[in-house]
Image (cartoon, rainbow, N blue to C red; front, side):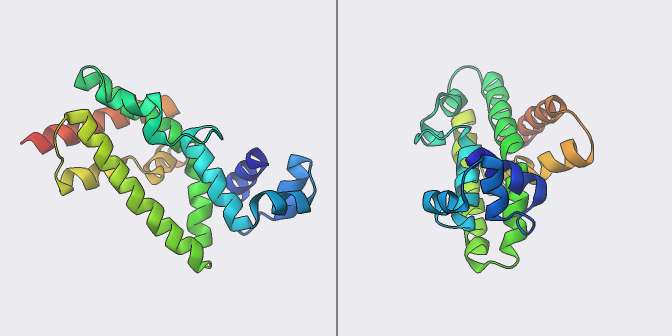
Length: 185
């Protein structure tokens, strides 16, 4: 069901995706979808959660090996690991994030959730940057990283600009290096 929801929300957006569409694609009844997730809102948020970590295991991103790699080895390797991690997340969630933004325009609960998720992503970015560098990062550097690592930059480069994900990942690593170097000045 989560795969069907991810596909529907990412391809069609919030408004054009119905629970019946998801049930049909998943090969289950609408009642099964509601019984499993409660609401369309809860289903979208569950799909985003799974997209961030890449599977349905109840292990937070902060406790996964790919996150731990941000604190292991030379700084250049750490930055490459961060770019891989963020690229993978953005590849899985950019369409879901756009569906969430669309829904936030008419659903106050989702508008609040979008704000909450972005605040959390900013703090996760701070934590990751401090793991990469072994020191605190200032707010200007943090905000540059937060914006650069967001799904909008991924979407613009890969979906609008037509660049391969590998180009985005390489660009992201290079940009993170520049931002962190600037933060040392």
